[in-house]
Length: 430
Image (cartoon, rainbow, N blue to C red; front, side, top):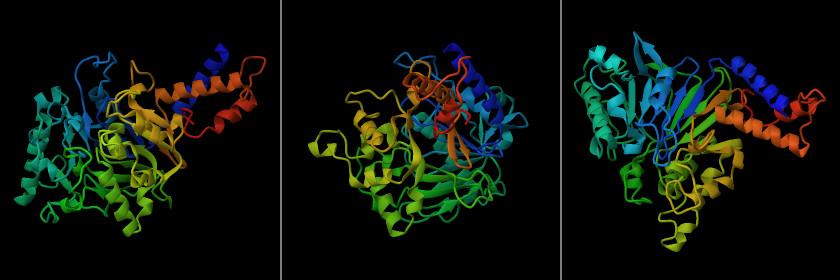
């Protein structure tokens, strides 16, 4: 048995080397209840959706806090020794979506980025996408830092400054200014697509804007907060710009609740945009909260226990082999929300248990690491350490059940190779 596992590990290492190419990649960081997602495109362009950068070594449960900032610095580019992101998307200004922004990201005129900023590894944000909510609500220090920076960039457009559209100054508003569009600065509204990032046009990705809507469209919220303002998008990937089809679809939406998703479904149906609801990867809204399915609390009143049809219809747009990512704390069978155990059970009615991935337990609860997904010509594959562990468990289970055999020398048999080859999205490096 030992020889089998060492042989499989060698197989993994070989395939890791073979896959060290410029594949598009999505990294979901373990940040408990919060979102931090880094996307790297084939030309090394980087996009960060939200951030939660914590300090300290362990969380309240005794699990190791993953060093998000260090990992970001290893995976983003530098320009004249200055680390930078091509794009930062803030879905909404809650603390668990912007924690650490003020300390770890550079704010101000990029011309004045200096030695002190460099020694602190402050990351320059070449382009910033936010909603109008960032100008109105700043309930925490990091939201205030984002508000100040967004206002600085917006003023460059108001003043028609010649530096308004250079890296470090760029901004785009997603959604409306109340019920009207912004007129004097870049903006995109629901129903529109985007492939312009940091001054460059891309042909192998496309953002489709689902939300936020005009304020008058949404009057009800599952919780008494500002989650109704969340950016909701479908990000479509091609493995090659000349491909005629999108190979991977990523659907994300901050903390948007079931009311928002119901409106998204309605607008998509009215405008025949059903394909913009399809997904290979879904980042479960609000950290696997029940608010995606109905109002909360879960059982008060009793009818809150019944999932809304519109939410279930959104889930039905999944593609074969799809995965749900729950960026949350460990999901336990209790009354916590988020994450919520009954919400997880609803997702498991749509995807296999092996395709429901909780960032807090990959590869293990005591020392979680990022879930890493690479886009391929046929979809996507996991390439993180948790996928490796899952592959080993699958092979072990196959051997013990007789589905996978071994030769007298302890090597995996030809049938074992077939078994590994035909496991979709399950084996590292495949």
